[in-house]
Image (cartoon, rainbow, N blue to C red; front, side):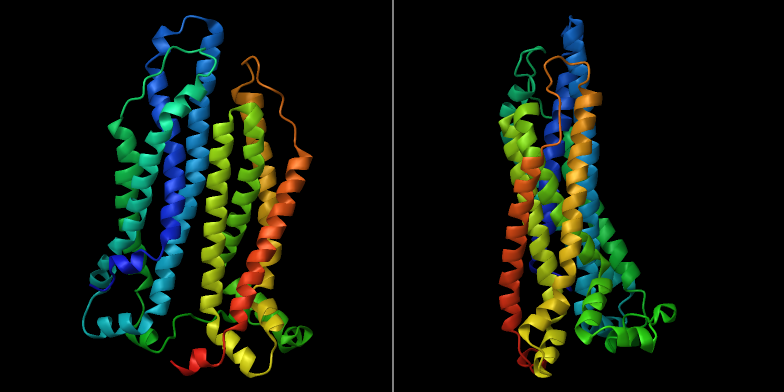
Length: 382
C-alpha cells in the first residue's frame, strides 16, 4: 500500500479539530431534536419564548461553530495531502513512470479519511457523556418540561458517517487533482511553476536584506500555514474571552468547555503549523548556518514573519466573540427575562492578550532552540 494508517496517523491535528466540532454540534443538535418533543407540552407564553430561544441557539451554534471548524478541517486536510505529495514526489513519480494512473495512486489517499473517523467517534462519545449535565443546565430554571436524552440516528449519520466518507472522497479527489502533472516534473522536483508576473525587479530586491526577503518569501510560500497561524490565534482569543462571559450568560460548564476546546484547537494548530514551517525550511536554515548567518537571523527569516499574523488573528477573535455574544443576547434571547446585558469586558481581553503573548513567545523560544540545533549535516545526509 502506498499510504498506510501510520502515515495518516501523523495528522492528528485534523482529528482534534473534527473532534471539537463533533462535540459541540452533537450536543446542540441532539438537544434540538429532543427539545422539539416537549413543544406540545408548553403552556405558558414565557416558556414558549424560552423554547424558541433554545432552538435558535442550537441552530446558530451548529452553523457558526460547526461550519467554521469544518472549513478549517477541510483546509488542513488539503494542506497535508499537498504536503505529503510534495515530500514524496520522487516515489510518486516512479509509480506513475511504472504505469500507475493518477486515480490508481490517488485512491490510496482514502486512509486520510480515517483521521476524520477517529475524531468523529471520539467526539460523538464525549458529547453523549456530557449530555446529561448539558441538558440539565439548558433547562436549569425548569422553564421547560423534562427533556429526555434520545439517540438519533440522523445525528450519528451527520457527524460520524458523512464526515468520514466525505473526507475520504475529498482526499482521493484532491490527491488525483494534485497528481495531474508530468512524470518528469515529479522526478526532477520541478513541482511549482514560476509566475512571471510576480517577479520582483533588481531594485526591489536591493532594498531589502536577504533575511528580510527570505522572511517575506516564507510567508508567501504556503498560504495555508498563514491561515493556520491566524486560526490558532483566533481560537485562543475568541474561546478564552467567551469562556469567561459564559459564567454569567450560560453556565460554568459551558465556559469550561469553551476554554478547553479553544486551547486545544489553538495549541494543536499552532504546533502543527510551526513544526511544518521549520521542517519545510530545514535546508534553508542549514545553508544559512553554513554561510555564517546566526541563529537569530535564521529565526528572524523563518519565524518572525508570523508574529503580525498571530496578533491579527487575536484581534479578529476578539471582534468575533463580541459580535457573536451580542447577537445571542440582543437577538436570540431578547425576549427572555433574566438574561444579563452583555458588555465588552476589557479586563478579560487584556488578561487574555497577556497570556497569549506569553504563550506565543514561549513557543517561539522553544522552536528557536530547535533551529539552533539544525546544522549543515541536515542536507549533507541526503
